[in-house]
Image (cartoon, rainbow, N blue to C red):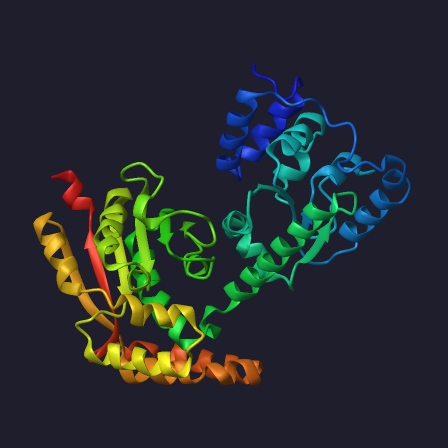
Length: 400
């Protein structure tokens, strides 16, 4: 039997963890196969005497006193729980670690089986906040039944790591609160994401992998609670859409929302080709196109109104992409596709005009956008469109 960190404890922990988080077990096994870590003996950042005397007790008092789920950043407190069992206090304790080695030491040193089997403890290994958000999706049923989760950052961590975790915690809480009611998203973004998400959710009841190219953050993925999202964005994750670092057919679905108008014209079709290359089933492309004359007029108006908005300036400088160019490329590849209007130009312009209202009166803005999105967003789909949707069917093309 392979042992973890030189003990059989790790194997028992892995077996219990696999019932709820099999993907994490696979990641940790690969890590241990490369280099088995040594048992954890002291907290990171030093200060063992101070931590032992005060902070361990304070951390666990906060955890056990919470009636809401807890996000605990830093795995080390679990090693020194004075009464380790399934009765954590909160309905769910989610321990977040960015270092695989540290999580490995924990699992190799501490018997967590009762807590893991009871479903009161979850472990997350994340390299950035987007990965943390995706790891929280399986636990949304519990998280959404409770009030906003408490966030606890182990005070023995180095300052830089604690600050990073603080930002992660803020994003995690934003994601959880947004998941309660995505309809509060501003009308313009809601009309970008909801139609595409509806089509993806209808593809399968099974979990799909979705690559969001140019997505920047987790907002679109929040519309896909059953599925795993990955963001490929040059500014936020450092991934260039012109050369996606993934093998062919790596993702079930690939999306690009309002990306091509920010790509230089000679690079647009290489980006589409990359998206098709890494997709197994579908590719969805949305945005304004030059075939929609009012889209160009609206962009010209907005550029004058917001001369410092570099994203709008890119619309004017780079020009809008062409549906016909994409259609010609798809036809030459014998790929099936459909094009449809998403949002009428008048509705899009009015949605953008509400932006100052969002800043000045956020609560009223939420109520207005919720009502509008729930009642009228589908009625806005039609001609003349500001944004259109191109849906490319890849699955049958691959089987030919």
